[in-house]
Image (tube, rainbow, N blue to C red; front, top):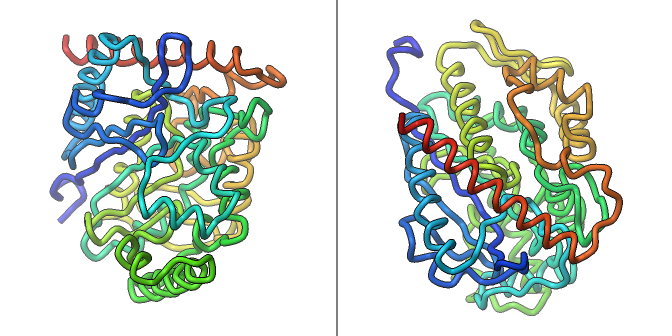
Length: 370
């Protein structure tokens, strides 16, 4: 069966937004969670997550995401609140956790560095696993991880310019620096058995670290299993039968939908192409998908975090891998070059981008409604 005759590939999105009041201050979502299906609290107080169901087309995904976002924004307008599509709050002090055993255990394992995670808002894209090509799909997503550069949306942490992809740096190089196997990108795998062995090893490492931090085993095992105890950016998700890509920042929804569409297109190509790992350049054609060696991928990833689309190497790589780089306008590059940002400036920026998100939803909804 050719790729064009194959059944649709289901995909879904989970995207997090900071909630702010009319002065740009971070606040709790309150009853915004009741405004739409798929609207949920996150583990820190001022974050709201909006999820879609599995959708069979980009049009369906876009319609559902925008419908849910629109309902939340309508309620937010009534409450004089806004949603901010920035990967960090730009400048803010400590951010409070919502009480939960799961968060408490993570904080005990990671220690003071867990504070970095509290300043991060991101996007997760799930794409349905393809029978017989699951490992190729997982490895392809690993190779495409530098595409996080397409939606980098904040270079700032606590008012200083940290990296073009500040959230990715906070996660990978700072929060999980002492437990790198938990939060960094994992190498390619040969088969599902190898993936399962890795999960089990990392789970045992996590259990050991948690018990050493004073957490009892019953609490650990009631809140974590091998699949939920790792935060590596690309994961096989048995519970959802998907491959999940967790690297992108939160961003304007039109850009997130575009990125999800391209990821699905890559999976669609897998169904009719040969896949191999070779060299350090990578390329995608109708007949084959060549993934660079993992060492080369890491070089591209590091440049994507550090410099984003300002890196010629990253831009060229993503073009070879099938992305229309010019179609993306990462917010992080708009914010670059400001120097340090104080609390009042950060509040103004949050309000500015909350308005940008509203405009994005209105514009796209109007276009698709015509």
